[in-house]
Length: 472
Image (cartoon, rainbow, N blue to C red; front, side, top):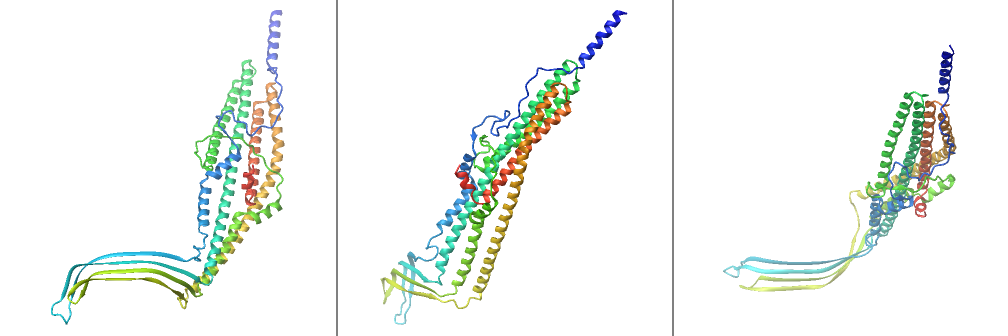
């Protein structure tokens, strides 16, 4: 009787002991802290560092859009000459030399027999220098010169706009690489927590206080995070390829971003609006386009005036004729003429089928179109600036919220992991805390990137992005 009672008490104590939480070696919970955006992810191969200033410098030197725009600017600059506007004289030298072999037959009433010559040789030489100079064309030549300068200014503004837009694209692409790298680091942190969960669950299964299904569930969640990591690595590779393309270098070239996303938080809307009116290259190009349209209309009007020019030249004309007859005798006749000629050339338009009226009407329409395009460009730029500033303010508020929220999420995971180690938290709750932290990390990266995008748009529209980038 006492023997059976002893065995019953022993079994009861063993079951009670098994139901107690298994205490693993206690580790102090780490205090949550901010993570460096430039820290290299563990799962990404090491590569040479690349700063944003270096990326912009390479892009300015190698980007094909910039290089093509610079060639257009060079052509426009080369066109700004007085000769191209028609203000300088035009001088041409001409030279002609011809040789002839002819059969000649001449008949005359004073001679009973015709005079003939077979295979008679002759040659002609003509050389002259001719100059023409328009001295009045209704001031069209001066209008044309001003038009060429306006076209050059327009192309300069287009090149500057291309620079600003390319630098903005490079900035966004660079920070996209920083963002995707940060997401990889966040997933790596989630994998560390998942591995710790697997280890703790396996230890509890080994002592018989947890079922194997909990280990299997932990491994399934860990594999899901690994799958997300592989997909994120692909996104990082795509972001690097996009940046390399903008920098005009091989897509396979690997690098590691060395700069963090730092958002300026004190942009003033009034200052940005004023800078847009003064410095925006697209807006300035539209303004000079209206000047070009005005010059085109004035050129058509100038064509109604008389055109007066001076002409001059010096020429030599020598003709050696081997088929000349002096009576019935075949002789060689040589003639030479040379000397200076000069004069005045004038033309007055009288009637051309009303074509000048048509051209002037069309020029007025084009001038009005250029004004409408200027208004449309200004309105679109103001709308873009207003939209970017609204996004900028909104993202600053969200950024402040998420920066404080991420610390709470990290602290929550640290506490949840400790409670799970003590057996006071379910696996589902730990997984939820882990997902909450990962989502918070991703939101913070996305919002910080979007805030920087809005800031970049505002700086590009105000025309100060290239100066700021080159000053770094």
